[in-house]
Length: 327
Ligand code: GLV
Ligand code: GLV
Image 1 (cartoon, protein in one colour):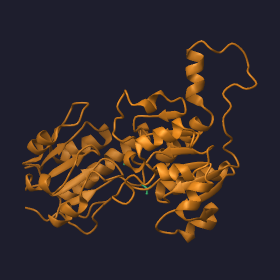
Image 2 (cartoon, rainbow, N blue to C red; image 1 turned 135 degrees about the vertical axis):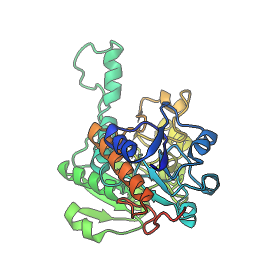
Image 3 (tube, rainbow, N blue to C red; image 1 turned 180 degrees about the horizontal axis):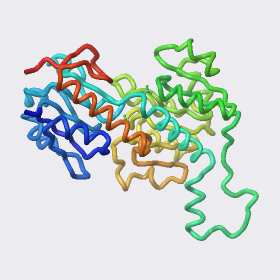
């Protein structure tokens, strides 16, 4: 008999076909995520769960799904999962690292450039019928080449940003709790402390995971340290940046601009005043959303799920060494 699994949203066929071949799978077809009660009800008798970053997986959830042996998250970030709770119960957890690194860095750079060169304001201007002639002072932005990029976090995606910055002849500063001397020469990076990072960056791009330590770490005090001409880019997780502090910093000119792909809450309330600001660009969490990358993420999530069900090591483990133990 095929193992029962729940797939909490339709994912690209490249992964879904593998899941359907190996498992007795139920797929959630709605655009919106299942509620917690529905997720529990659907997963109660399952051995595997292919989850999204909108599904909260913790001890209380796991205790109601006693057969669950593997959670394959369709994302690189796994702040939606209390990993220790999974490990304590012998539930293997997988994510989708690597394949989305360049796609996400491409998008973070897109946000950076859109903010620096006021692309969305330009489009609004044309759409509003305001484009009458070539204007010497029209929509002046900031240069990217030669500017200082501050990377908050130097994991895979942060490093890929540094590679892109090389082509723009940027000076690149980084802060990460783990200093990466091996990369400093190759990517021409300067390791600095947090204060220096915020004080010197023309562009400050967030590439840390969301953890209790990083939650809210980009806040009013940090905006005060930044240059008034600085641009913030967030393609990591919304709650790392305090939304109301960001709103006030943009409104009051503490910083010049922000380009973000993630918000807190997510989605951002449509009546939030930040959406009225012209120096704010936001996208609906699409940094990894290329056709190729979402297909590869689906494949890795499927491979993680199937390995867990077979009692094998996951190809992309989060709690490495936890081989699904439950019966
Ligand atoms: C998306 O945000 C991811 O973590 O993959
Ligand atoms: C995520 O893949 C990161 O390490 O930045």
